[in-house]
Length: 399
Image (tube, rainbow, N blue to C red):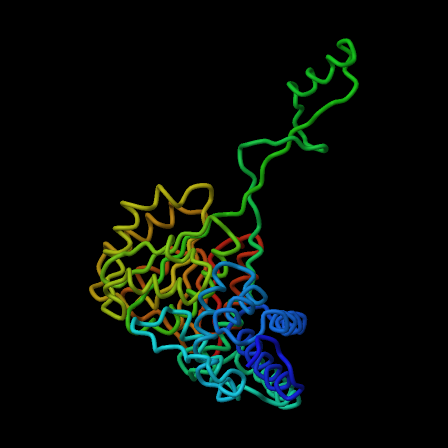
């Protein structure tokens, strides 16, 4: 077969495959639109389809816009064109890709789920109908408990969480910067400017305070009872970390683990895979007092400066509750500007603080909120974006 795309039938088969491949990439998280599909067809028109490497390079140059997208593209290309039977009809001599001998990277799971959502080549009306159903189901997912979601619903919840933004109010610092309408006179710049006018002060320069976003510190319980809630809330923290640089995240069960650096990976699946590798006691017991003591001794002075907001995500079911838990909670409360406790047990309207651990922790928090569905995360974003209320805040959401 020649290196160019010749007959009309061949062009039609290639177009169907490129459209299906583009939809798979878009479902896996890559920004692929109709313009990229047209560019891909034009690129194949130039390089031809006789060489698999040429096809891979041409499509990669069109669809991959960021470095972290290259891994997803490679996995999708391998899986898609190994599964499509029409590829053999395009080039008889094209070798099929060999199966991978090493374990697939984290992004391949999302690619496989994207390819399994629908047929590789589908009708446009069926695709539009599926998108319409997804939009209608979104309202139900907003109120559904994370622990009651199916695998498909959890995937939709993850994507919704990744799109959330946290416009946390900024806090003025002690540093100043040149500002036209600042309240402080910049004497140095004013005198320097007067040298141009023989010492006459014509223009006054001012300074204003530099505003920076408030640091966020998250302490997440990864015990067995908090598994689903913590994993989904990590997606929210990944989205926040991607937009902000002052986010510190710690996981605790029996011991405390700092995952702040691992969570900075651009791809969410890769970030969570790194976090899982770093933690040895996932879904283990709960020792809140010991973990808080480790944080207060080793990390509080490093990450709780400049009015940090602490998000404590746990159900408060301490393994061995004693007065040390109250002491460490009080120390944490005094070290931060705002301590928000997120507890999934608050989703029950009849919740009462009967557990000994909850009784010891509750007097030392500023806000007590649920974290069990998408609505509760939206409420948390609204609360963090506004000024803190006076007194302790207790919010309950009925199941």
